[in-house]
Image (cartoon, rainbow, N blue to C red):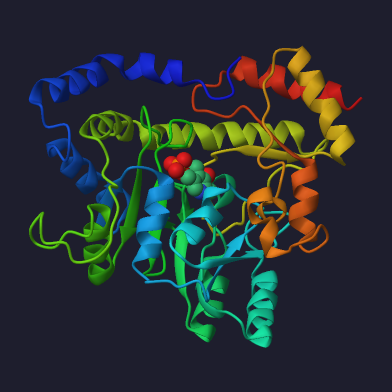
Length: 375
Ligand SMILES: *Cc1c(COP(=O)(O)O)cnc(C)c1O
């Protein structure tokens, strides 16, 4: 059994996908070919946003968006600690200082009350200036944008949505991507809900000015002309080949989202009396990048994972080390105990296979084995 079965998906779309890819190979328009523009139009329409700009990865998408704010080391950007490393890394790469925020135990997302406390602490210490908030839609579920926007407004901060795991999810009936008139970044890494066959990503916004600056940063800070460099940018384009792959995958994406939701629903029905199953707030939907359970403690998690592995069922731990305790950020001086919910989640969570092509038989095997593992 695969954790994410990309082969079944490929088999389904192979004929169309191969012909699209071959046509790019024959066209020699490998960089910014017509497929890139076509994809950007489709993405903007799907999300319901004015501007969708594709780029080279989710990490680069975050960085491109952050670079529009001309950040300095004395600028604080608030990020959850319980997320993929790139969320914080992009803040550092953009020249600012990440400040880590605790998570909600049930939704796994940034806790607004922990965010408030962190902002007040920054202001009281007086070394850094609060500038922005980077919520992450962890495992596919949008963060608490209404509450976060209130906090952002109160302190005059920007919001950049890390939607790298939540492409396709909805918040109050709107698709993630520029939800609050701000910018959002997503990833097309192969294992994400919408993935290509390499690295890829996109930024979204309704804001024309922000879109123009991001477009420039994506290609070496270019202005109207290729050699009119207006600012420092990056080499952040999406390959035409990857755009061709994504066009075929986007065509079946809505259906795949429905499958993900159906499978998540069946998992919860089968497991909720035996495990702490994931909670999705009633005003939003998840793209189900991961289906994540919580064991009682680290020891029980180890037992469950080993029991499943012996039966041929793969699991994954996202994320075993909260970023505030990572070696890379040791110099910031965080200690165990600083963000207790993140730390407890890192010890207890584990994710089980969830992809649109998981059969009911496989699902049954997984849930039965899980239940047996805690007998
Ligand atoms: C995957 C991911 C990223 C980075 O995306 P890449 O395309 O791998 O660079 C950033 N943030 C989160 C939350 C992610 O899951």
